[in-house]
Image 1 (tube, rainbow, N blue to C red):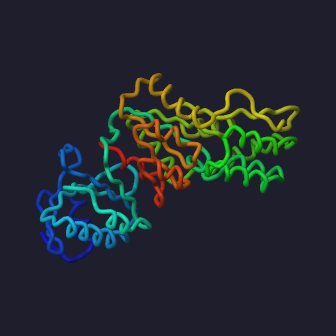
Image 2 (spheres, rainbow, N blue to C red):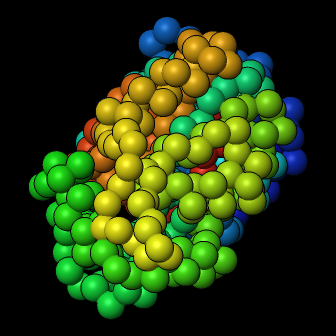
Image 3 (tube, one colour):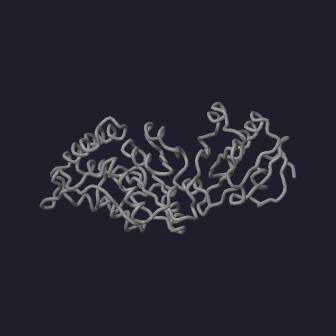
Length: 331
């Protein structure tokens, strides 16, 4: 089969083909995700996108890749998941050049270069995720501060902490102190309107359907983490405890601080508690406080993250939403 239509390759691939496909002088041969085990000396990349409008740019990049690597045949697979995105996988003799990787249309699609064995979706695993700006679209302490009339002061401290410029425990203390005297009812009001990050529910539903354990570990506060646990059916939630005295925030937290190392320890403890197999843990975060957690997981994922975390993570989801996550896993 052959075509010059830039969308024809993707239509052919979606039809679960058994024959090859010719496109602009290059031959593609389809394989099923589960039928081609990793082979020594090959590299796999996954290209994840949302709408057919991305296919023209993706095809142009794929053909440039084939030309650069002098490929006569490109093995290609459609990767199917429950969430509503599109994904294809290419098996290559070597990694794309830095110039080609830089030229990828990142504004339209996600590229995942597979360097290690991936966690398997069909095997029970563990996801530990940050809450603020990861599972939800806000920083709860900034919202509380705005409701208490001290938004600017707290937001400035939060940003420095997210960039890794301040020790977390110290910055947490400074921010919470700004809330002293605020009416505790602002917590309940904020709990009623927590905005989930796009794709969160779909991602969690797919993982849960394969018996994954789901945990939030947050440097934020227990009322919001507990709200997420209840609404989303999470297996556990860890966060900091705000002190409330006579219906007002005391400007303090109590108990053990959920800091960067605590988050990483949560992952290790949950792996042991639920007997999660080696290679089956994922961590998801957005700020510098998530670095130890990301490094501790078998697959560390940065989501619309600060530069320091994006550079350290195995994958950085920079444009699409959390529905990308199931496509980062093997079947």
